[in-house]
Length: 219
Image 1 (cartoon, helix red, strand yellow):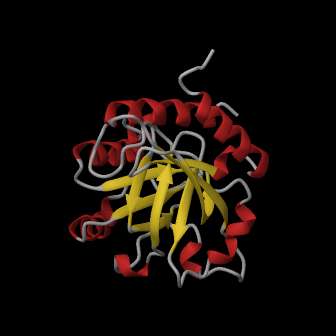
Image 2 (cartoon, one colour):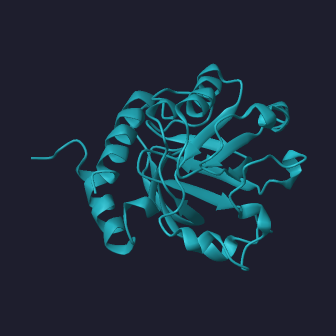
């Protein structure tokens, strides 16, 4: 008997055979009715620190449940010793005023600081997300990358000194950052499989996206 999501399972099984792991598989909402598969170069990092960043709602052009997208994100890797972002307020305000986003990467974060980002995200005063770093921390250091990728305890003079990306997508178990064409860390990018999920109508598409995101994160 035909099951409602059999077509998605067939596609996902095929993709899994070719992808290194589930962190390299992501979903987006298709513009048409058909479900298609494409490839894109991205850098895989750890998942979001809090479920509060992963709201299940239809908002703007991003329509994937339990996944947050940051457009034109500035990226900062903060030391675990940072407990307050008071001195970072000017940079945060500059990012917000520019209509851009802030991706914070950290191995540890205080409850107060995490709450600050969550509140700003929920109030939509700053598009932001706090995530965990890559599994292999050594790959983010050394002479191959600019000093802007070091963990820092104090902010730069301006947001322009922070590394930028085209987009960053984050969910519970992973984050993928799509670098700009001139990024010195494009060398770290790997092949990301994007499944653009279609549907009979908008509600059906949303249900199929929800199913796909949950299925991808099962492994």
